Picture 1 (cartoon, rainbow, N blue to C red):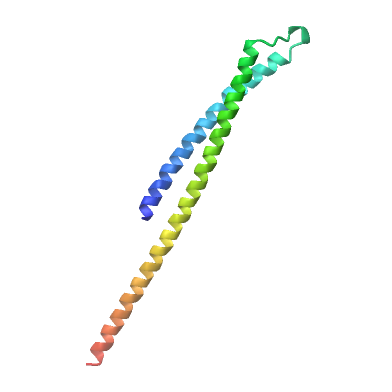
Picture 2 (tube, helix red, strand yellow):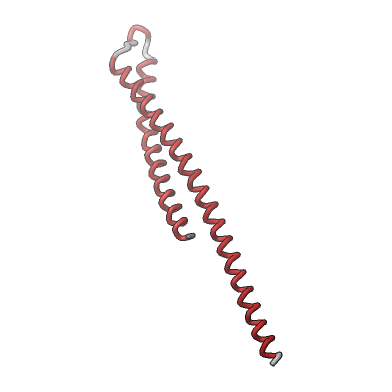
Length: 121
């Protein structure tokens, strides 16, 4: 029914907002890790050290970028699902309107037929 589809759309929109928030929450830590890595790699050559801290920063950046890409894909999937549900809802609403119009026309015809039969008596 239209109300079921509308409820499902609302649920999907809440889920999409949650995914979007999760994605946005990762941008701050990603920027921080990138800036820390940039500080380390911009040091003069004698001070450049490739150590576990640098490898940890690189791994953190990679993990955050991977998580953001996965969340972006999930958001795109949810957006597509919401769009399909909105199309389904529009079709259901159009079908319901057509049926209501047909019922009103049928009732008008019955009324006219009854009126005509009473006049012919």
